[in-house]
Image (cartoon, rainbow, N blue to C red; front, top):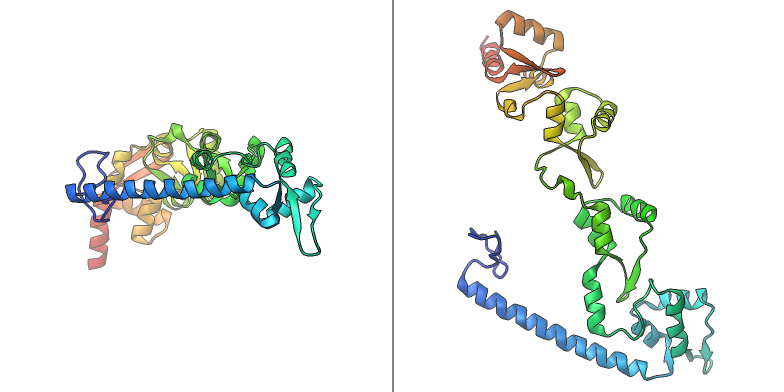
Length: 294
């Protein structure tokens, strides 16, 4: 485990241990308290500035954008979409009514953090939401897959503190594969193709027909190693002692027919598991050594 304070690797005796020593723990706790204190002071200043803006009836576009927690271009688009008229004070001075900003929320309640929401509540809301980049990293999915799934599920974003975010819990239900949490080992499709000498199409059809656990990580489709081998009649513990035919062919650099001839000629032990023939690993290695000596 890595110490949360000094960054050194250490052996932790409990799953909740964060620090490598009492010194780091003491310094770490002080640093956490200092960070919380600074955050609270920053929020207090932000809240003071927000209340000051809320006391004004007419706001500049810069102040209005800051109050909403969005960019000026986003504010322009909102005002244009909602057909809100701007107040032209002079040739170079434009203002927007605070009451018009408040009316934005009657039509877009799920899109924006309400204007009168305290900074502390906005921070709490940020903890319940997650950005697109954070979702891609957490669930190990692609940008295209993310938008395809949320569109199908009808999950809408919210603009919080100037950023587009999505509620975390619905995303967890949509992307997290809790039912596969106990599966530790996975094959990629390419690994199955290489190891078992089958085509990609065969892998997809076979896993679909046998309803095997699979998940997506980025562009890769992963298939449960245990379920694949079990469906093929393979005992995972036999992998240490036996080669599959494709593995043996690769080891000897020969064709399939030649391999079977060698098995018969040298009486190499083999077993049949489902549709697969497993060849004794030690005997093949021994045969390889003898072939090199010749």
